[in-house]
Amino acid sequence: MDKPLNDFITALPKAELHLHIEGSLEPELMFKLAERNDIDFKYQSVEEIKKAYKFHNLQSFLDIYYEGACVLVKEEDFFDLTYEYLQRAHADGVVHVEIFFDPQTHTDRGISFETVITGINRALAKGEKELGISHKLIMCFLRHLSEKSAFETLEMSLPFKDKIAGVGLDSSEVGHPPSKFQRVFEKALDHGFFTVAHAGEEGPPEYIWESLELLKVSRIDHGVRCLEDPKLVDYIVQNKIALTVCPLSNVVLCVYDKMSDHNFKSLLDKGVMVTINSDDPSYFGGYIGENFIQTAEGLDLSAAELARVAGYSIEASFLDQASKERHLKKLHDLVNQYQDS
Ligand code: ADE
Ligand code: ZN
Image (cartoon, protein in one colour):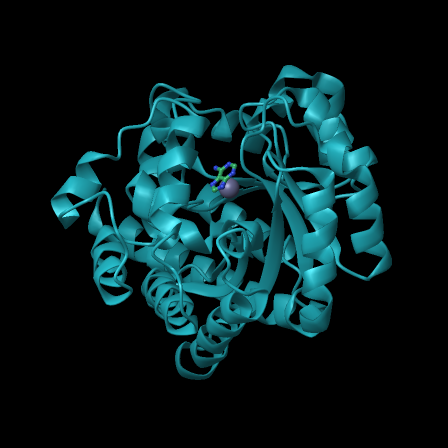
């Protein structure tokens, strides 16, 4: 990619709306934390960790992702993890993040909810102060676990409710439909959390319908399989439901063979509010900037289209209206400057 478009991508004010904080654990930090916490770790070097990153579908990735998360033990570990991510996001021009975390991955190992959320939150506060990045935190339920476990997790989160904006649904999609968690999401909505869900990554369009109708989600995470159902695409466009698409993730996890096969541009052309995100950047070969660059290259997206996508990320965020308008004004000014140059 030529330098000016690359710089333009970095300069675009953008929000990252689909980022699993555990998926930003770089092999170097993973190895360091394994030593620091005296973990009996399967890998003897950073190179060995990197060699294990060969995925053929979502589950093959999740198995390694949960294994890696075992090095996170102390509050400081969650702080280091989150602050490293924020520094990288800042370098890519991210102005606002809505970060997922998976409490059950940690509480099931005996790490307290408080340890996890305090570490993450301390880094988010520092990121806001020192890097100027605003944030929301989204607690995800692991859908391969039971409804009961999700209810217990929701209960555990209540003392920290002021630090959590929303709830989400992630992990192994196929065989675990959103309907399994309808009652938990109803309770979360009663508590005032907004809701999102992974759907239509590997699972069918029906899972997207269920997320919208039963879980009352405000956005769909991934959602790329919506294109198989024209009525669903119409619904998503009419109701301005944003999709938090993760192009590099989709290629690495073999949802598409290569970037030029991705349906991102088709969705954009149909008027879907598609955004670009990094999902689990340390596993999938790049942070949000790299996702923008490779999507632009693979699908021949113009500067105007990239700016539209960045604008959607601000609009689809849970920021207040005044902050959205402030970021969108900066975005429009940048586009005008780029066109004049
Ligand atoms: N957890 C982390 N990354 C995920 C993904 N891409 N899909 C579902 N669950 C996840
Ligand atoms: Zn995800």
